[in-house]
Image (cartoon, rainbow, N blue to C red; front, top):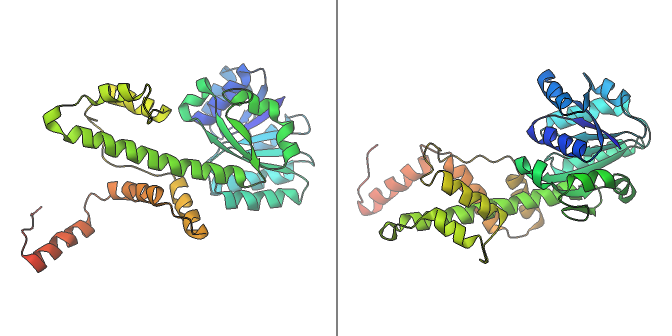
Amino acid sequence: MKLGMIGLGKMGANMAERLLRGGHAVCGFDPDAKARTALEAKGATSAGSLAALVAALPAPRVLWLMVPSGKITDDSVNALLPLLAKGDTVVDGGNSHYKDSLRRAALYAEHDLHYLDCGTSGGVWGLAEGYSMMIGGDAAAVEALRPIFETLAPGKDQGWGRVGPVGSGHYTKMVHNGIEYGLMQAYAEGFSLLKHKEDFALDLHQVGEIWRYGSVVRSWLLDLTTDALGKNPAMQGIAPYVVDSGEGRWTVDAAIELGVPAPVITLALMERFRSRDADSFADKLLASMRNEFGGHAVKSE
């Protein structure tokens, strides 16, 4: 099966390489000529435009989007629409909001085109380990691409599946990332507690290694955390500033919309916001309040 890959950033390029290793033909497009050249060096072909990419693919065409969510995805989807023919399929493998996927799929359905939303997890490790894929869309359209999903996944029957109708793939991935926020925050707080018990002089890397085997809290995330602690035990050179890419916010929005309590995920998101406030007005005001009602000392900057 020949696949068109749109977006040859790190993850898109790695997915293309895994497909090539699995015996699939890949033609890729990226506005960056260097990215296209790098893909060709792996044994794929490339196209200098979306029109050229579509023309290079056999019908019915399959195109996989690996571009940032929002406007770039919308622009790509809209640009592809007049180039495609009945029966072609577009897979959005990025982290799009599920409501955007519903809107885009409805537009494509009007033209007898398939639109699948594929929440994709695996990051930089996906090339070697395989990708976890949560797919939403028409069951027959998903089944037609089984060879692609089987090649990208950790195993033919592992780590991937159609989870429901269109929109469900990105919704499931959104919640997956919300859970990720909570897990990361719990590990960070736990290891911080260990570090601050200075009279025990705990070796955090050693503790992580112990927990990795047989422990209830063992996980791949713990493996990565332990590896990071082994490389840099004091986290030297790393600023205490944690970004969020949007999925955590969307998960909290969904919890509010559905009236479902999600305090751990919500607080984990709030902690990320807090990490960015190097000059907290709220904390200054709290200190001032204590001084006003109790005469408590206020530290000067």
